[in-house]
Each structure stands twice: as structure tokens, then as C-alpha cells.
Length: 73
Image 1 (cartoon, rainbow, N blue to C red):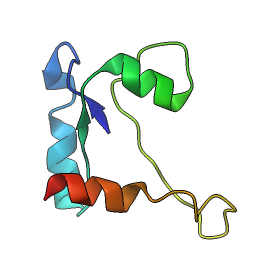
Image 2 (image 1 turned 180 degrees about the vertical axis):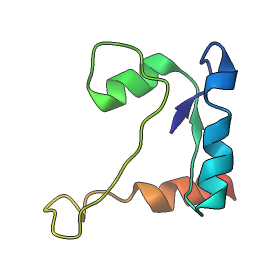
Image 3 (image 1 turned 90 degrees about the horizontal axis):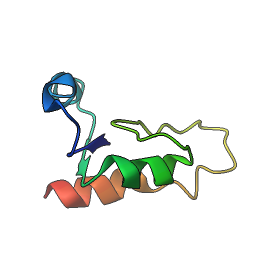
């Protein structure tokens, strides 16, 4: 996930190319502040990733990949 209001945007522009090369879904969210709140931190966030661990108890709750893929269609 990347914030669309990042200044300068060029510091993120290599990430979509890398994600496409590795077949990893990505999405731009409207603001750094929204991403900050989602990450639960106090400073603005320009990008983050969501990973799952096969043995994690949270695996069933993390269905973000499907949601992102639906946004890309």
C-alpha cells in the first residue's frame, strides 16, 4: 500500500514496477494520514506491506490480498 499524497511522489514510483515484476498486488490509498491510522503509528506513513505467516492465528482475519485484487479489476 502506498499513499497517493506522498511528496515527492518519485520516492515511491519504483515500488509499483517492483511489485508487478514480482506479481505482488499493490494499491494507492488517498493519504499518508489514513495509512498512518491503519498502521497504528503516530507519524505519517508513505508505504507499508501486509504479510501473513502460515502459522499465524490472524491468517483467517487477513483477507486484504483478495480486497486489493478486486480494486485492481
